[in-house]
Image (cartoon, rainbow, N blue to C red; front, side, top):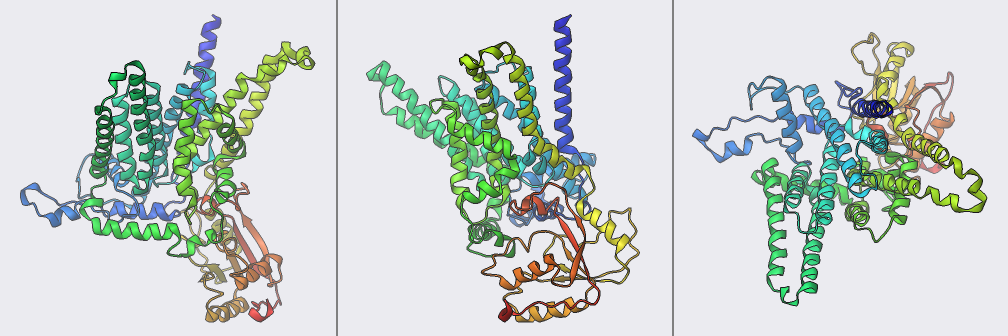
Length: 586
């Protein structure tokens, strides 16, 4: 009877955890629609809408092949676009393949569903990784349910599963590559099945995003190490076993792995080769932006930043949450350095982090592939603490409570788990409420008079106010989308801004994108403007502020501006004189 009760409790626990996992990935998956809130998502959705094919094998022309399912967008590979296209084709009843029309909402939702599903699958891959390394061998145990809970409520996983971009897929593929590499080093002989699977997922990763070629370093290192290890074993067992064929074996396996990867990369992203000129052109531009050779307004936050330190302060604490971030660092440092599994996880993190963390652009999404592995290290270190907790009770001054060590350890574990999942629970609130821009727009339509003149900022993907289809839009506003980015360099903009401030009724600050991204020494006028605006010296007072309550504006910009920016609204103080000081007054 007791066993049946325990079994029922375990089943209920798993159902609760799985339900929470699915809920966290799919809650309000249509956030922001029909507006293109995420620029990368918008570009991918637009590319999907261009996928058409009139190619026929009976009237073959290479020009037709070049246009067949050509996305005309090469910042990313075609795999995720094709996956979204096929999912819509299936949803439409397998009709009109290559010819049907895709709406923007359909494209975005298909991409987001792919991200959500990939994120859910990734959780189970991570559980497999933990089970391979961990002392907990029963995957039905409460320990694995707690691991699933932690994986489910990770801020980065929740956010990226709601973005119709490539991050969730890349995280999944890198986790799978690491998992099969762990299986390879776990076997006594070279596991060719796992090697082939790792090459397939490496190819799919490259087909998703070309920069994923860096993923290949992990299986190649494992392959070379495994073959050398086998060769040294043979040499120790029989000196005659050392023969030149072992080097050929290493070369042939490595070449086979590379060819298999290349084939899958080209099959699922063929236009990288078919339209190689467009691909190379896009690759050069994106690389130049990422490395800082080309400066654009949306990379100004990285000017003067320190590689690695920036990610350590602006990315990881917010994407992982402070408790997991600290546990992962402790795991990286203090978990056994003699354990081949721990070392492979470390290697996979460093292989990606060292080159990627050094480049000029340090967006949160660039760190996405290693975030699940850092989460694994945190789980393994937490397990290390739990299994070694009883060591404390060997000290004489703690023996009087040794009879309660089970209750104490469980209590402490609950506290730690709650601390770990709290950032994820908080982040869920972003999608449990209407989009911040809809909330702000509702207030604007209700409180700002008709025909008001409003000063806002340029280069936002969507300018507020906007309607979600339920609110009234009877008010007409004259919204000035002003170019603050070039204020210091362009004297005409300085005069224009003074004129605007003399006439506008309200000022919108739609995000932290401008005021938090420009160093004072390089952009003194811009910083002076915002300092005076925020302090009230500009002649405007703040009348409304809309935020998610997460207090993460100091994170890397893209962490907040796409799905939960803080919006500030200022109203002109009657009889005030508003002006922007010129350079001589700064």
